[in-house]
Image 1 (cartoon, rainbow, N blue to C red):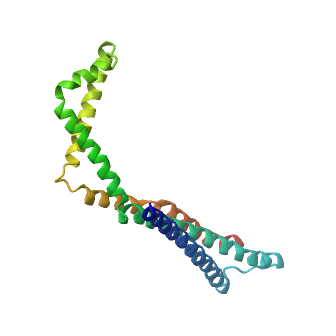
Image 2 (image 1 turned 120 degrees about the vertical axis):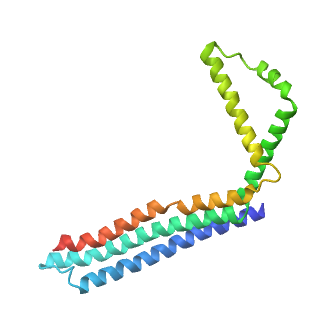
Image 3 (image 1 turned 30 degrees about the vertical axis):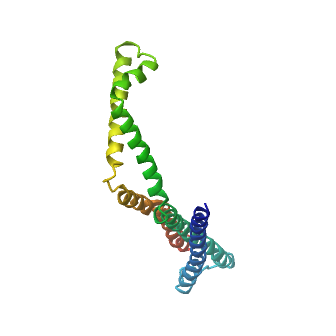
Length: 199
């Protein structure tokens, strides 16, 4: 239990640290972009009001950078935290092994009691009509297929742990990529559109 609590705390710390780092980095990017655009003359106001508006853009750039890069940092932290909590700690592998062990027991019980399947079905209400009978047959066929495949995957010689880690790693790597890209594109658009609006 303490190991699980430590893993969760470490994962949460990773997500928080990457978010805070992203916010700080984004704020710095906002200030640098503002300084570059101002020194290049892209943010020049011709009137006193537009000059004040230029300086009002500094907090907007700071906030936009902090929000967008912080958001990307958050998703980066979530990906890393999920990898730590599920794959590196072995929690996901243990869960899958338990599911496969139960599937193995169910398959062994089903194989040992092949004649008892009729007794189990006798306790269920009989399907009504031709369609009901076909659906019941399809359901039994599907359940037999699922149990047999889980049993094959859960066989003692099957190395499912490595497969689980690989698949989980691929799924975790894809987690949050799209929201991060969208946030960074919006940030770039903000930095590009502001000079155009003032010109």
